[in-house]
Amino acid sequence: MEMKNSEDIRNLPVGVFDSGVGGLTVAREIFRNLPNEKIIYFGDTARVPYGNKTKETIIRYSKQIANFLLSQGVKAIVVACNTASALALNELKDSIDVPVIGVVEPGARAAAAATKNGRIGVIGTEGTISSGLYSEFIRKIRPDCQIFGQPCPLFVSLVEEGMIDDEVTITMIHRYLDHMIENDDIDTLILGCTHYPLLRTVIAREIGDAVTLVNPAYETANALKALLEHKDLSNDTSFDLSDHSFFVSDGALKFQQFASSVLELDIQNTKLKILE
Amino acid sequence: MEMKNSEDIRNLPVGVFDSGVGGLTVAREIFRNLPNEKIIYFGDTARVPYGNKTKETIIRYSKQIANFLLSQGVKAIVVACNTASALALNELKDSIDVPVIGVVEPGARAAAAATKNGRIGVIGTEGTISSGLYSEFIRKIRPDCQIFGQPCPLFVSLVEEGMIDDEVTITMIHRYLDHMIENDDIDTLILGCTHYPLLRTVIAREIGDAVTLVNPAYETANALKALLEHKDLSNDTSFDLSDHSFFVSDGALKFQQFASSVLELDIQNTKLKILE
Image 1: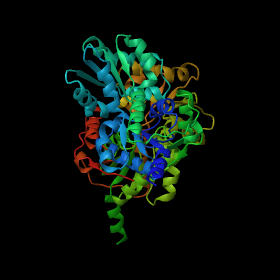
Image 2 (image 1 turned 180 degrees about the vertical axis):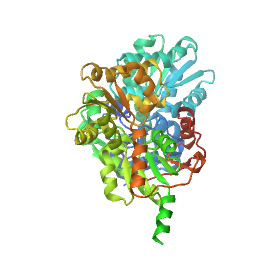
Image 3 (image 1 turned 135 degrees about the vertical axis):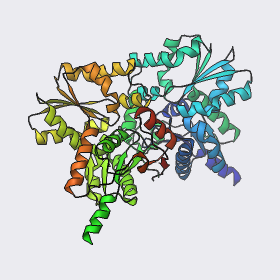
Image 4 (image 1 turned 30 degrees about the horizontal axis):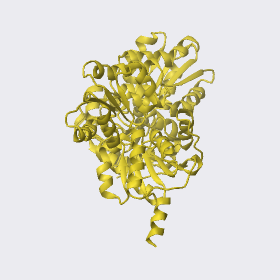
């Protein structure tokens, strides 16, 4: 009887949420690395972006979304948004009963493992950088590291406008990052916002290959895999893209178009879910 | 008795709302042109921006805000946001009992009066431009006009980052506007988003003085004055900045800082009001 219950739980989906489309970079890594897990994605497109809103507001929004995902019967929740991970993860862990992971700790762990000279840059939204949470996690693992944070508020708009390999984006990359490379001498850079992996190729080309880029989306999928195995929650059924569910709080069609054009994910039947 | 009631109504404040800080450019014109009116401002900073959200969502948010302003006893409402004016004004007029004006019709009227060659450019958010409402109002007055719309989605982020006279902003001004000047031969340009007047000086310098810039914020203050006079709702008490009330749905301090640094409005005691 207990065995059966446990099997049932393993079959349940994993909830994944973000302020909008950015978290699809995390979902994509989960599809690749955990093909036996079904996901329910929520993008809060009616209230996007989160990056420059207050901690109180991000906690409130995150709890509303987590409650919606729980109502859909998820066995675990991935906070696929750096800002929500940085500002609301502890509050979520305290208030809900399923395991919750964010993108900050996996990203911090990967950066601590990657750096040789102990000098790590972190780029993200205002909220993520001012939280100091990447620094905190890195220093727990390697207290010798020095961490340099830089908010890059324009990157989200540039990605959402499709301005990837664009002279304006290149100008902003240099404006935001040159001092980290030239003065702070970083050898590792955390792409601490789920939109930024979409700029990865251009950033790598512009700042050169002396700096290792860490993509927390990739690390988070690995961390989810380890978590599910540890808790005996891993599923063993194979899924494809049409088995997953996608919800947004506004503009389902636009969400699908972005997923299709930017992420090459052919997502059908995204449903609207208003949260208030 | 009726006289007294009517006098009481005249003493009531005017509600002004926007998705965030941009509507303060409208509030500022009201302070200048209607010093006898007290305003209650609401900035929906928890859900900003509105520019790329759907009509359904903008209508829902606008109604929530209008209901809050009515609960504060306003005698009229100014929709100081182009996107909300373009997408939600008719629905607001149908659902509430006090006079409501938006920024689109006054801006359209001023542009129709200003153009010599009948070729008018409109810049704004995706929502404002795709609504086609500026064109509709202009053609009602001057059916001979040709109107050219251009969404400028990056301008809001650039203004909010304080990147006013900046090489990136100048690049984007030319990218968005050059074809309107060179190919479409416009002689009048409507700054159809409340953030854009903050770029007015730079836009004017870059596109040259052959094009007249229309600021709907200025025109809206004039329209409000005419409306209040027409309805016998004008007040005759003089106010200063500390008499007005400001509410935001998130980040009161950041709102005050923006008002102070960008708009040179010294707004104290902005209050938080969560709408859901």
